[in-house]
Image (cartoon, rainbow, N blue to C red; front, side, top):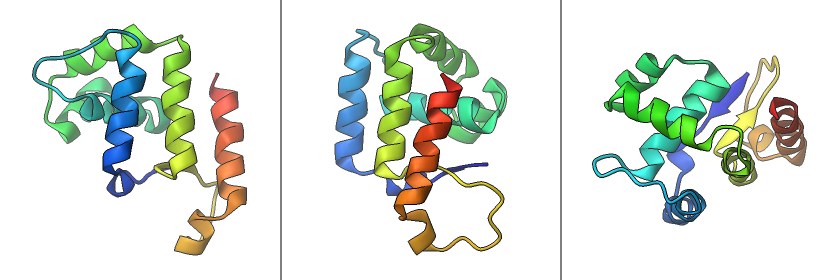
Length: 121
């Protein structure tokens, strides 16, 4: 199970994701890059449909889908996922009964998350 911890996103993460997406020369007038990336994380890792993701993020599902199609099967998609794992925004936890902050910050959880990202490739 993937755990998305959007509350840990900081200003440097916004800047990093903007730089990653800038490589594609992709921009949207009305939707920030972070909202688009959150939509991708919800779709790829938690298997939410585009409509479910758009309802959660209050944006158009077509915009999320178009952004995903522009970055899918490129190194940028995996750069986003790897950076999110490195920062602890996205973590893979198996069937853990007790989840504590110490457990989430451990190196074993991040190593397992990196391994699962490689499997997604």
